[in-house]
Each structure stands twice: as C-alpha cells, then as structure tokens.
Length: 144
Ligand SMILES: [Zn+2]
Image 1: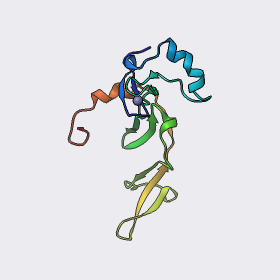
Image 2: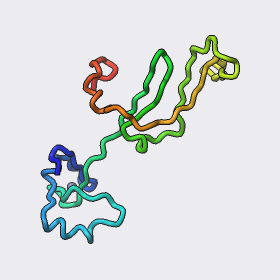
Image 3: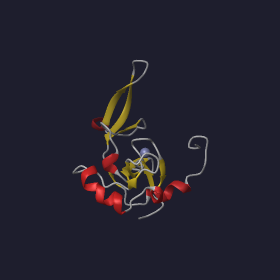
Image 4: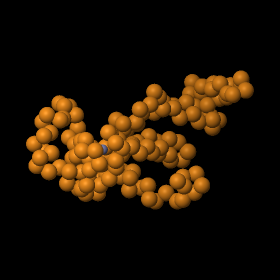
C-alpha cells in the first residue's frame, strides 16, 4: 500500500498516514462482517479507536480555462465530485455582440446590465491540475 496516502477515521477524527492504520491478518479476516456491500474498502483499523478508517478523499480541483478573454472550458480532476446547480459565465463585455446573444442581467440597484451569459458544464481535465497547484504564485488572495 502507498504509505503517502492519508487516512481518516470517521469515528474519532484521527488522521494519519495509511501505514499507521492496522491492516493485519486479523483485521483482514474480520472485514466480511464489518464492511457492508457497496462500502469502500477500508485502509485498516484506526490506531486510536480501532474503528475501520478510510483513505481521505481529496477534494476536487476546478480550473477555468480562459484564452483571449473567452472561457474555453471548465475542467476538474474529479468532475463527478463537483456539486453545482449550474455554472454560468457572465461576460459584461457585450459590446459588438449580436442582440440574440445579449441577456439583461438584473443588478443590485434594480437596473439591468447587458451581458453575454453562457452555461458551462465541467469536463474531466486532460492536464494534471494537482501538478499545476505548486506553480501558482503566492499572493494575498491565495495565501493560506
Ligand atoms: Zn478512530
């Protein structure tokens, strides 16, 4: 098993490397009576409370791909895990657009503004988004 994976225990909140979760022969033999059908395969037993713990599910990365000021695509490394009702791009730079492309978007003060509104879906990223993360320059916006 890959020791760099992080496990978490839903019972007591323990988090640690999967190498610390006990997946010895005794634990393996007990799994048929402890794991329900359809349940994900556990990483082992929690070292703190002996409940079964699982590999932490990393949250998805979402990237909006823009070229020449136009959104080309919205991609994610795990599009199935991104839960949204809709994803809209509202472009207020509607100058020169055809009338049938323009929507009147209600504004805070009760007025309407012309914009091009396009609905996007999230597709599977064909580039390594996690590999790009370290390349983002540190700024006040994304410093954590
Ligand atoms: Zn635990």
